[in-house]
Image 1 (tube, rainbow, N blue to C red):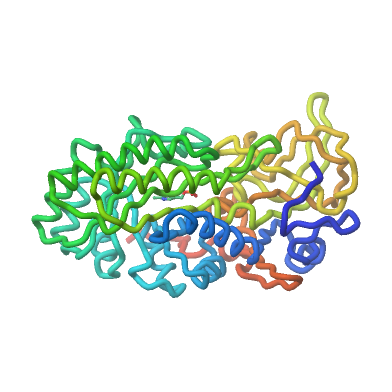
Image 2 (tube, helix red, strand yellow; image 1 turned 30 degrees about the vertical axis):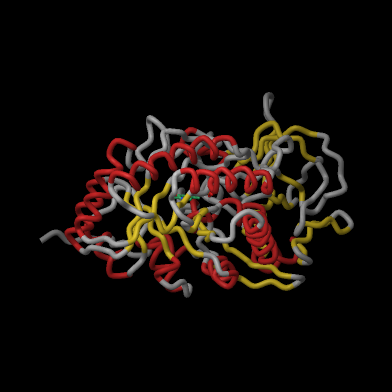
Length: 428
Ligand SMILES: *Cc1c(COP(=O)(O)O)cnc(C)c1O
């Protein structure tokens, strides 16, 4: 596969990202290095917005910031007008710091502590409760004006078992049989405005699971509307829009998704007499995944009687998706884009665990030590899931735009590994 998607470009065999040479960035900032294209993020957002606009004008896009919470990324999306889906007080704090007003932040958390509920209440963000327990504890702290309940529509989907966030085995959401009670409790306590929410999973490439789950969610909404006498300000259908990672993955047909899901939504709104609530959608991956690559340098070639290993400086400490979910990430050789693929390699990171492979049995051009690999579609759940495991400082991140570049996260230094720790404890 030698076709590169915008903003990636092949200039005489060398990789450029929105007009910036990968080699230049690496000379300047070293590896492993995340390179993020501002233009691609904006394009992804605008494409999604255009697809939705054609079918329904009252919608809001909430960016699920856990996918990539770099402040520069948040700022780019803030300037586009998105809202934020936050899953922790830390994310709320970062979103507020990035200039999002509280009305633009929806908190959806699970196993939330009382002090966290207090912080969220004080921050005035909209809270989407995950359980009756959370609701009752919240109401004791403060009765918000607006409240939403996450429903488990009993249908989940996703690219990996860990990424399915609804259905029988799921820890998320309130079940239909408890929904009326939750809204009644909130209403009696004095909550005035309501939303209803679902998020069924991640990495979904077709519309069918959304349609099935939406039907279930709206049936619950109807029941709540009738029995708890609640009108909905918004209906949130969650995120999970997938992107193609592997060469055989077909991209989500965004317009078909919008046409099908939004027409089903509108039909049910009028059938159930639910008025014209605002539709919320919460993409994380879709907005940022293909806007970023991970550059990693080859330091070792090792041939054993069984395998050919390419040793690189990014491991599952830098990008955990292959090790954690078995995810495929396409890899290209940034300094040999014209070479033909001729060898099968395992691309191995520096972490002392056998599972630390970015790719297995991968066809690549003949690799030499010193080559530069680019791991594609690394913008979602890449840096945000990275760690210091094996005492490796976290990578740097650089933002590029039309031939220019800016460091947006410094590479961690050895000192950062010891931050906040104490040694030589003298017991009294
Ligand atoms: C993670 C998450 C999302 C976004 O998931 P993506 O697959 O990245 O689109 C949306 N809503 C909630 C509540 C989430 O936890």
